[in-house]
Length: 294
Image (cartoon, helix red, strand yellow):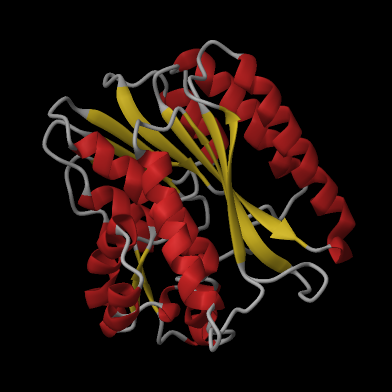
């Protein structure tokens, strides 16, 4: 099935936590001159127009990137959150939002390589039109299979973003098996897996998500895993909210310093959206080490 299109959700709370985490890794990679490889298994479009009727249908960005402003960041400063806002504010002022592929392409230097997978026939042309750098390669292929086929890359350093739509329950187990295979081929890579937090009204997916986290945690004993972190951002509680009430990231082999930066950014965001007149009074976040760095 290829019904999912991210334009309906662009710039929402899930994008904010996903791109904050991605940005923290990209920033660390760029601090060294050695080349790196960037892989996005479910890239979508590089840029989303928030004036599009699909984006306006539920206007999810209003409770994501729309919560931020220059004034709020001055009240609750955090370097990573400020860096995120510096990257998105100009586009947001023009009612646009940068997709994951857009973030990654921006960090490609000569000598680096980016690989972007998108299977949807209506979205893939948008992706290819956006990827203007010669070292940004696109594939209209299944992202899980293409990831394994691309490994190991020539560059020892890099990051993989895995964020399927989870329309099919099988995608939860595919995430685990793909990461397990990938670690065998590219042990030095950083892996970021995004997942939704779904209320009990969709019990089957909620159970599949729980199994996925447990199975991923079991991979932490692998010698290829130097650390494994779990970051979750909730806009509400499942008792009050039906559907996706938040989302999480499993980060494997995070570069040193990313955890502190993400924690500070999420704490600042949490303070902003839960203060007395905040729009999300029951929002929360957590950061747990499933395998702490040694």
